[in-house]
Length: 330
Image (tube, rainbow, N blue to C red; front, side, top):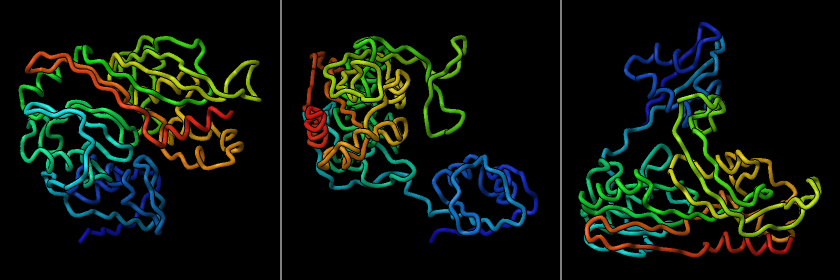
């Protein structure tokens, strides 16, 4: 059973993670911070998720410490859409809603769990016990193509191609508004947001060395409707192709928001930006769309063992097809 630790703060104004780390010696401050961010701390029954929030004098806190998860994911019989497989690698068309590897909030039902069952012990161990075979990843609520290594030689060869940007990756996104210009190159540095550690942000200081170099090339494929509150000729939404030169966390989502075109349905970087679309949707195609409108549509690389050039493409999943159909009516 989870352990529940009740505490009362005598001193106001202390950071929550520091206060709890001082009170619970067996837990590190980083572990406590992760527990708070995952919603395991309450104040007088109300859930707190900000580790930097200040203590309230006399406040009754309770930290729930969940049972430890197994160190090694166990195989789960989850159907996979396999595009290609040989003894060295497997290419998957991942459905939206499936996390790639286990992490807080997703300890079961991930792609890794499914692969452990499907591949029956033949995954590369380079990624570690929690990420066997994983060379690159896409967000839980992004659909599309992933390649996974089944042998260590394949893992090393694929990792090198992703590191030197020779693997080609093409994404399709639906965004609020339309990029201006219609095509371009977005080159920034990306780092954790100082205001929300779960988010990534563009580093604004051009001389800063923080964060990681990130490059997205985009092309507007179609525009939809006219924004009644925008400039003459401005669109309500657009379909955009993004080609990655780098693969940073949330890269496309952050970059498109950075140029004023956040992804439709994005709960983190696009919140509150598409109210007008909600108002004119007389069906359910847009209002029922519950994820960022992003699909990893194409992946190309050289087979790291045979040397064969491989290329894979998949159409938009049904939910994004319905979204596109709605946008075409604007």
